[in-house]
Every structure is written in structure tokens, then in C-alpha cells.
Image (cartoon, rainbow, N blue to C red; front, side):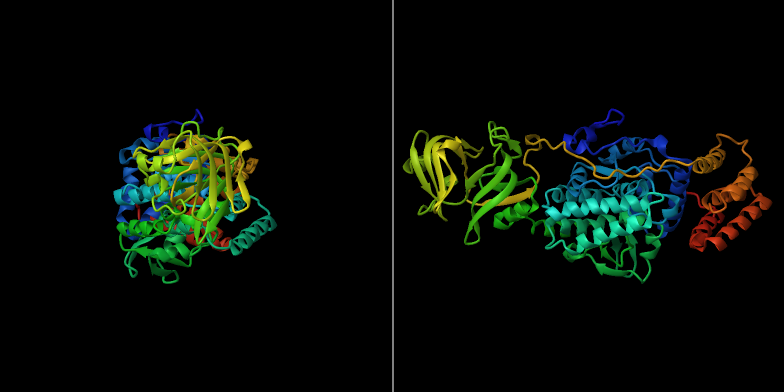
Length: 585
């Protein structure tokens, strides 16, 4: 992990392959404009959300130490989060879905440390610290919801993706970045939107990851709770969007009862959502999650699980009925009557038991793939794994014996047994042969000259899931971000505007009371006549100080902005309204 990142016991538990996504927050990079954007969104949100958010939200703001006036320093936040068993880390925008969910399984919130531009103050498709810090963090103070989030990560990180899923992830990430970046040409955005649209229309049958990602979206990101007639907000995407948090409460957004059907409702990350799902309580979320998990290959295994892994073209694992786990890139399966009778991986493969690699059976041993029959022996009711030592002797399945094992389905393994490995219950899980031939009808699957043949023992595949059984078996430190979030070079004008924002911030914080706010207003109206947020901040100071003349000057200027920029009129009005209510949070 980067040495600039503070750690703690929760973060120390993270495996290396997750730590590769973490980056320093670089708090000093936030400008005074960024701080003003945070402050405006939080003041407006808390003012509105106090009426429409689940009660856990405001309580959670206090518990997690999130300030209304300043962007949170997440490593200061961590000192408070640890009291509820969680931590937070900074990442660069989107990270792969499996990694995102695995962080959750370790009770770690992934926070994109960038902040939206003032021009996108109501909504941004890119993950930012308002969405993550102000949306996700407060609600996890609710213990039942926090456990749902952890459990979701645990199950979701095992969901099998399709090869197209990752392509779509990269396209969505790229689109969100360029839409949030300053001065991106419109034709570039249109091309990126077209690519996302084309990919979404040609995804084929949805993968497990696509389906569980939908559940995540309609609960963790855009969930409502309560009754269909009077729901409350708990989803982070709504809690952090001053536009959508208002919009979602109107009749224009269809409210549906939350069920497993939400897994089959796709979403568009770049647009407000036309329908939302309402759960009666947080316990319902966990019930639906378990219902979905029961449909996953993680729990069903079988031929379909193996085929999903082959289709994913990615590292995955199957677990046999003996507990033996085979991790690798699966590329081939022979089936008979709807059941797998032989599996094959390509490239580096590792064998494990209970998520621990078997000694001598890592990727160095199995660097060219691994193949094995699955099932029972032909004409014998007793599976190899269920045979007692006496049974094994009766069928000549023991060391230094030349044996020919014919499996149901037609796989034949012939060779001299060298040794076997047993699990903790005493069942044989692996048998090693020398001078071995493995055939299926007339097809040769293994030849003696290829070396030792290790045969997995298991009558069925009980589980199939994404990723390795033992994370230490493979080099997973391979993360290369294909498109970094774009940081524009600041112009002289931008630097001057930030300086004016900083002066007002310093005045409000009491660090410099010598600043002339009238002079700041003059410079603002002369050089930056379209900027509205700093005028709102100036009005707050004048209003609280009962400076009637200065208030009138500022309001007159804001009226001019509203006439020239009607699209920001409601933002100005809401900001002034909150100030006049003298809201104290």
C-alpha cells in the first residue's frame, strides 16, 4: 500500500490484490470551490433529507463524523468508522465490480475521492466523494443495513461475470470520466455514449454479476424504504444527489415493491431513474439477497456453473463434493446427460481445500492447465470419496497398484497410483498417477509422457464462483486503469476565482476577518459574472450580519444571473431559502 495512506486494523486485513486499488486522498488538492460545492450540496441535502430520508441518515452523519461545512478527510473519518467496525479508502473513480464488492465484504467503504464540478452540482455519473462520503457512509451506521452491505459484498464478489461485462465496465467508466471532465468535446461524449448504448444492447444473456449488480443499484444506490405511498430514502445515489432526491419523491417516478424481480431491471447510470424499488424494511433486503444467492453457481455448482466460468474467460473456481477446489481459467467441459464428466483448465491452475492451497499443487506444478474426470465409477454404487480403506483395497485403489478406472460417461483413467491426499474427514480428494493414460471414447486427454497425472476426486461439482479459492495462489497484482480520471490544468482565471472563494471561506471560518466582502463582490461581478455559488456564500455572511445594503447588492446580482442563466435559478433560490431559514445542522 502507498506509504502516504494511513492504515488501521480493518485495512490491515485487506489482501494485497485489493490494496492495489487504493490511493491517497490528497486532501490538499481540494480547492475552495470544491469545498463550497460540498457545503452547498450538504446544506441543501440535509435540509431536504431531514424530511424524506430514513432516520438512520441524519443519525449516521453524526456518528461517522461527516461535516456539513468541509469535505471529509476519510482517514480522520476512519477513526470514527472503526467504532462501528468499518473503514474507508480512496480510489480513482470506478473499480471492477468484483473488487468493489470484495471491499464491502471486508467492511471497507470504497470512496472515489474526486468531487463533482460546480456545473454538475446536482448530479454526476462519475463516483465522487459527495456520493460516497455523504451517501454511503452515514447509512452504514445502521447495524442491520451495514450487515446487509457486508453480506452483499461477500456474495457479490463471487458472482461470475461474462467477458462482455468487463468491456461494458470500461466503457461506462470512460464515459463517466469524460462527462465530468471540463471542456470535453461534445462529439467525444456522444461517441462514448453510443459505445455504451451498443454494448448494453448486445450483452446477451445477463451474467450473475450483471444481475446482482442490478440488485446493488436498486438497493444500495437507489433504494427507498417504507410504504409505496410514503417511502423514505436510503440509497446513496439519492442521498447524494440534490436533483434526484427531490425528483424521486414525485409521482413521475414509479414506485415498485422490492423483490428478486429487481435483478432483471437494467439501469442507465448516466440518467435519472424512471422507477425505484421500495423495501418495507432493511431485513427484506437480506431475504431477497439470500433468495438470489440460491440461484447462483456459488450454491448450485453443476454443469451450468462450469459453463458460466468458461464463458467468463476469467479466473474462477469449482468446488467438488469432497471439498477439493480447482482454480484456473476453465476452457473445456465434457458433458453427458446434463452432467459434467470431465473438466479442463488452461494455463496456471491451483488446487485448494477450504481456501488453502494444497502443498505441491500450486501454479508452479499445474502451470499448463489441469484436467480431471468428475462423477462415479461405472457399475459401482459407491463413489470413490465414500469408500472406506477396506473398499479402496477391494477395488485396488491404493499406492503402487496398476489400475484402470472407468467412470460413468466414458472417461477412463489407467496408470500406477503413486499416492493420494485426504481431507480432514478422511475422504480421498486427490489421487496421483504415473505412466497414466486418460481417454474419452477415442480421444486422448492425457498421455504418460506428460508426467504425473493428478486426478481430482468428487462425484459432483457443488460450487462454482469467480476468482481463486486461495488468493495467494495467483499473482493478482495486475491492476492497470485504462483511463485515469481527467485532471484539467487550471487557467489563471480559475486560480483567481478559487482565490476569491478561499477569501470568503477564510472569513467565514474566522481565519481572516480583514477581507473586504464588498471588494470580493465587485471583483466577482466584473470578472466572473456567471458564477452564482460564491454570491450565495457572500449573501449568507451578509444576511447573518444583518447587512441590508450588501444583501440587496448581492440579490440584485443574483437576479441578473438568473435571467441570463435560468437553468441555475432554482439552485440560487434554494440556497437563499436555506440561508433565510437559518438552518443549523
